[in-house]
Length: 147
Image 1 (cartoon, one colour):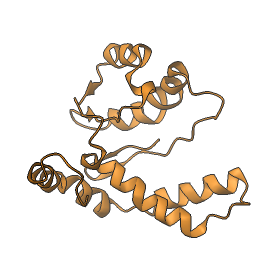
Image 2: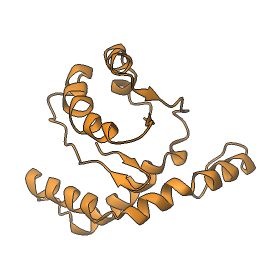
Image 3: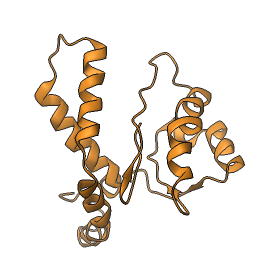
């Protein structure tokens, strides 16, 4: 998990494979990196995709208890979420280095390197491109766009 805001990015969090329940997600992500990241932002709104752990009652309750404001976001429009484009940039970077025989820790290292290589200008560009993406989506009447 990673988070971005204009001019900033969070630390990257790797999930433990055997711990993917909502409580584990909250402990690993919300109570750690995300909470620290959002704490330094002024009036942050959290934009998440439709992954079940994001929508669970446990996660929702924790967010409400900690005054986390979530954007209402259509799950079927991932091309509007700036971080989805960032994941694609990272995926290309990792694919250049990844070998099928690579050990898990080496693979994680490649992912961390790709995250570290993302500069703030790229993040800002992705965020600033949202109005163009919305316009393009409207012109395409909700169908897939080049974004």
